[in-house]
Image (cartoon, rainbow, N blue to C red; front, side, top):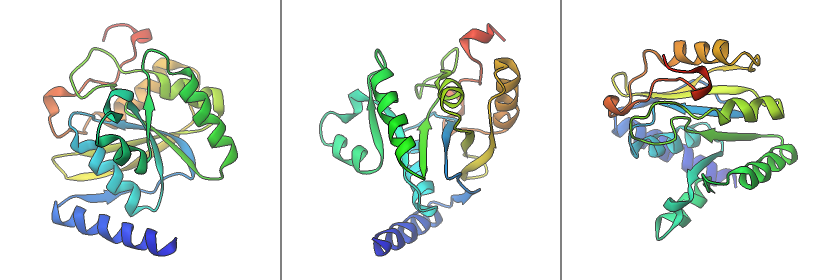
Length: 193
């Protein structure tokens, strides 16, 4: 098993170096990762390389439609979890039970919900954190600086605007691979900007 992690970590380092990207920051042992900007399918590849460089498994919520066909086994093997966005409750409950059973557990959520520009982020990362006590870590990629990494970790206060102000401040200077598709961090319950 150690050899598996050694090979995976070194492969990830090599691929990041060849692509001229670098991984930064350290992952928490347990927590909810909110990842942004999410503007390209390459975001998933960079997230997997970030996880491998750090020898962690990120359980990434991915819409169930992506698991059809040949992509399904690859997504499952790399920590992807199919999510029915019309009825996410059962999947979330299963993952939270898994978090209780394991010493290390990272649940990754792309709060933008899509690679296209939208009006609002989805607030599931805050709700899951508040319900479970798991902290939120802001994971990111920044195309201009070619960095992918783990940013600060916080425990939501319950004040949605204050918590989202913290999120907005962190992501203010991050640019996705296709920056025109980025949805600025704002939850529907906060109202328009």
